[in-house]
Image 1 (tube, rainbow, N blue to C red):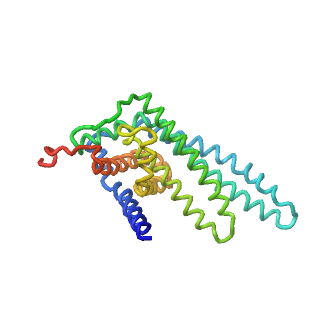
Image 2 (cartoon, rainbow, N blue to C red):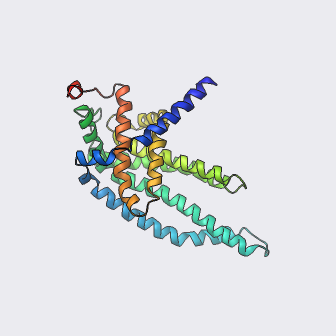
Image 3 (cartoon, rainbow, N blue to C red):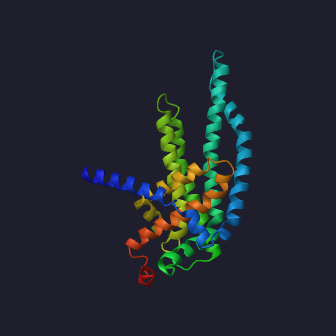
Amino acid sequence: MKSVRLGFRKMIKNILKGIQAYAGTFGLISKLGLWKYFGVPMAISFFTAVLIGFSAWGLSDNLGAFIAKMWFWEWGAAAFRTISNFIGALIIIALGIILYRHIVMALSAPFMSPVSERIEKHFYGQTHSHRNTTNAAQLWRGIRINLRNLLMELLWTVPIILIGFIPAVGIISSVLLFFVQSYYAGFGNMDYTLERHFKYAESIQFVSQNKGLAIGNGMVFMLLLLIPVVGIILVLPLSVTAASTETLKVLETTDRIAVNTDLIKN
């Protein structure tokens, strides 16, 4: 029981760290001249959001009509159709956000890894790459990680959405869904740093051991998406920068990164 309490406290502490890491991200990006790396990812993010948004708009009514067919009685049919359209829209939006995140994160991998490297060099005087990677390798790694996370996230999301149909459980379902999406969003942001230090399976284990950091980073990521247009454009620069700084701190404690004492003296 004590270990459970300690684990819970560590989780909360790391969630707060993941959130607090966003403070100063604008300044750090400007100081290191990182905005130039975000041009293509910003464009990918914007056009992917537009494409998925229009697709969701058209599919929500179709899904609502399909759900409405489950009601076999004439009484209350109109009310159930309205509810079905609302439920269909929620499902499409939830799945659309999931697809958006993983598509953008996978395609942005070759552009985000240099950002993480610059941040590591700034704080530690050099990059401690334990694995040599190319742009093609980074893209494939991004696709592989995000495809795996997409499947895992859907395995959690579908039953959570179904649970939401139970009266008085809808709020709990929404909270769970938010935490699950936050975790996998943070996972993707952290992997831009981890890909230089760990192999595929090792990175999955690392994030699993630091769930709080992933959730905290992903929570702000998800909230940024609620800001029209601006949120979609800025979400990657801010979240990747925040994730990189916190991931590097954890790697330092595990001796994957050596501190440059000259930087400390200066």
